[in-house]
Amino acid sequence: MKLDGKVALVTGGARGIGREIALLFAGQGADVAICDVNIETATATQKEIEELGRRALSFQADVTVLKEVENMMNIVLDNFKHLDILVNNAGITRDNLLLRMTEEDWDKVIAVNLKGVFNCMKAASRSMLKQRSGKIVNIASIIGIMGNAGQANYAASKGGIISLTKSIAKEFASRNICVNAVAPGFIQTSMTDKLTQEQRGAMLANIPLNRLGVPSDVARACSFLASSDSDYITGQTIVVDGGMSM
Ligand code: NDP
Image (tube, rainbow, N blue to C red):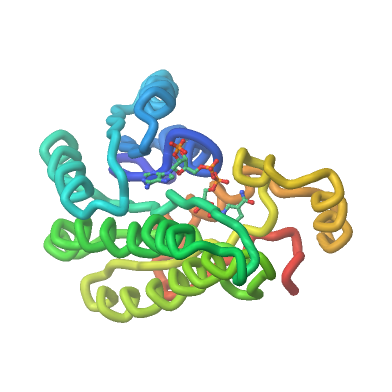
């Protein structure tokens, strides 16, 4: 199988896109650790991974807290002995127009979406650099490329992920570690359930492939970037949006 013998860590892996990535990787032969702020959903997803015949770990860890991330990484390495794939998927929205956006909502989104990626890459880097191999996949968004009214904090965090990805790709290339990003468009999860029927209709009108995305559309792109199929690709952002942003 594509990811046989590999160990992966997926942040925000309890539900939505992260859960789909974790289950696809397990189905492709990887042992998978997930972290989330909600331990009940994380434990349920851990069980689903184990039902696929793989080893799994779940953590209640907040990606904004470096100490929690480092503790989690140590436990993953103690249990699984190596870490081959890191998917930085945890993300949140706190949308509002700039005039109404609070400082707290700005700081929170930057902390989870951008600092969280920094924390996890930093914590994973020691073992990946030592083993001279690794795949890091950061979940950005087409909003980080296009911008969006009412999402200044989210757009800045996701645009930041794309340039952070390129920088670390350059830093880690000599150690055979590939660092890439996936930028989803409109994917049906609880994050987009918040949108009104009218907003959904407007989105759909701008999607050439004429359907909303589903988590597996994103998970398959992540699997490509996590596998040896993409060994000569680094610093790139793969857009998964049904053609919406072209
Ligand atoms: P969901 O809200 O469904 O899932 C996000 C997950 O991240 C949840 O399990 C959540 O935990 C977890 N999480 C939130 N904050 C933290 C934190 N501080 N530490 C650890 N885990 C945390 O979102 P999606 O599955 O839709 O989104 C996944 C990623 O894809 C995000 O980065 C998002 O920005 C990106 N994306 C999504 C798009 C979409 O259309 N859905 C489009 C473009 C990008 P909890 O369950 O406790 O809330």
